Image (cartoon, rainbow, N blue to C red):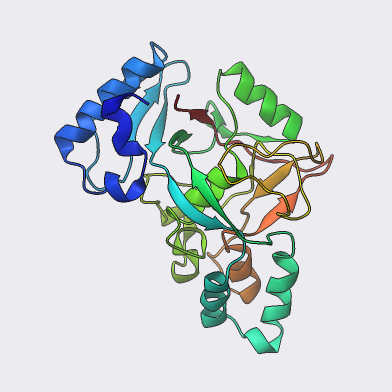
Amino acid sequence: MAKNVDILARLGDFKGASQAAREQATDALVEQLGDGWEAEAPDMNEDALSLVHVATRMRFAAVPGGLFEMGFTESDQEDAQEVMDWDGGGGDYVEELVATARPPHDVTVRPFLCARTVWRDGDKIVDADRAEALRVAAELGLRLPSEAELEWIGRDGGETGFILDAADEPDPEELRSRFGLTELHWFQWAADDWHASYDGAPGDSAAWMGGDPAGVYRSGFDLRGSQAEEDCALALAAVRHPGDDGQKCRIRLAWSIP
């Protein structure tokens, strides 16, 4: 990364960056990425830079990187126990959900660009199978986010066990991440192949390939109703799902920062 963009390397450092430093970093990033991107003024209430993808006119957040523990952790279990009847069946349900999210492992996330919302064709939200999602992203000159990237933003930079602390918020439509991202509660495709556990998982945030090409998707919960324990469990950021031939999910677009 160019020197002015170095503030994106670590989330902890970015939080203390001044408006002037963020403006300089945004301009440097656009220059680095080329004519396909435009700068927006930084929002000091967000821990991200703001860019526009020229071809789609979609707004993107330049998400700072950092280190976090990916997968179902002891801290996640403690968070879940606070909102669920763990010994009355809730614990068994969670254990079933997160069986593929072990062992937890440290991941270094590289800064990346992430669309603020899921992809829409006009005003219509697109639901697509994995092949279609990959095709759409490629035709737009972009990519899908990796599992590690989706978990990083779902955990709000490694700070929460639940996606955007959703267990404490009755309406996920109102949830906005520290990076300025919304709609993180819907099923969304990751770029990765499916692996049934994290045995051998990489320690960086690149998509993990070489597994089942059916793919993997993340999230998928609704807390607008009764906030049943099942809904709370599905909001855990570590939860992951294997794709299949009939599965359709939303498309969130991403791009790498060189």
